[in-house]
Amino acid sequence: MPSVPDGIYRLTRGSDSDQAMTVMLGDVGANKVFLLPETVGQKNQEWKVINLSNGNVLIQQSASGQYLGYDGNLSGIMAFVVVGTEKTEWRIQPSDNEEGRFVVVVDKSPKEQKMVLDISLVRIYPPMIGVLPLGFNEEQAWDFEKV
Image (cartoon, rainbow, N blue to C red):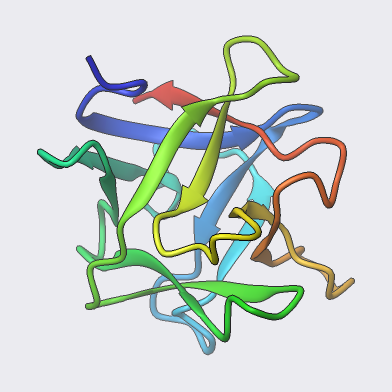
């Protein structure tokens, strides 16, 4: 049984549970993904989890139909999270530190270091979502709230 069943979710983060992973539909930088205040009914904060037969998932933005991916090299300290047409596979696994929450791992992480969804190191507003090494930040788990 998958950690998170197929369905449409809002992804929020631990202590930032009032903020959801958001894509700016139709705006400049529309392929970037941000953490913004949660707004009920906003399609740009809804993500479809699609479980694959190999145990991985695709995460699709429900309004645009684009897939969650990353832009950059995973051998560095960080890559930006983006949406696009490329189907990037992820693994959703229970957090070791935060019960009921999940860590979202890039399936093609380097063997020596798992790379996970996290808040970007670039300190701007609104905060961008990035892919960082597992354990880089104390809190890297996400809540998957069924919509």
